Image (cartoon, rainbow, N blue to C red; front, top):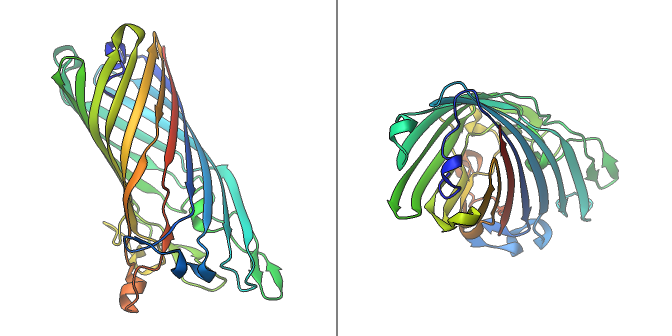
Length: 315
C-alpha cells in the first residue's frame, strides 16, 4: 500500500487479487535482554535457524469498501544447535501446511472520495491447521529418542486465534504517501501440551503475536510503475497474553525493530514487491517462569535481516 500506483489503491467490486508471498528468516545470534551474548548460549553456541515461508493469498472484494482474504501458508524450517545432552550439534527440521486464516477488512472512507488517504480495519480468525508436533529426534546421552521439533520451526502453534488488523495511508506531497499498518493475534489457548525443551519439560505457550509498520512510499518512476519505500518495522511476542492462561507456559518473548526499505514494480494488473528489513534493535524479554526464578532473559535468537518477496495479480 502506498507507491504501487493508482490502479492498486483499491479493489473494485467483485474483483479478485491473488498474492504469492515469500519470507526468508535466518537467525544465529543469541540475545539476553538487548545484548548479543553468544557466550551465554547453550554450550557457548547460538542456535542457527533457517525458516522459509510461502503464503498463498486470495482476496475477494464484496464491495468497493469491504473485502475478504484467505491466507494459506506453507512453512519449512531447520535449526542447528548444540543444546542436546550429548553435547554435540544436531539439526532438527520441520515442514508442512501452516495455520490458515480468513480476515475481513473494510475501508472507513468511500474509495470514490478518498483517493489521497484512507483507513481500513480488519478482523478474522486463524485456524489451528498447522501441526505443532512434527517429529524430530531429541538427542540424549545414550542416543536419539522420538520428540517434537523446536517450536520455532513447527508449521503451527497449536491454537486458534483472533486476528485484529489496521492500516492507513495519506498523501503527504506529490508522488509520496505515508503509510502505517499493524496486526495483533489474540491466542485464547494457554499451552499447547507439547513439551518445550526436553521430554517432560514445561509445555509451550500458544502466545499472542504482533507486528507493525510505518514509513513513506514514493513513486520514483511513475511511468514505469516503479516506487520505493523506507520505514520501520516491529515484530514481537508479548510476555503476557490478552486472554488465556499461557503466561505460565514456556515462551521466548521479545521484540525486534527493523529498518524497512522496499521497492515495488507495477505492470498493469500485476505487481512485484521486495523488502529487506535490517535489524536495528532487539530485546529478549523475561517470561513468567524466568521472573519467578529471578533469572535474566533466558536467551533467544533474532534475525539480522529478513527477505520478503511478493507477486500480486488482479482480475
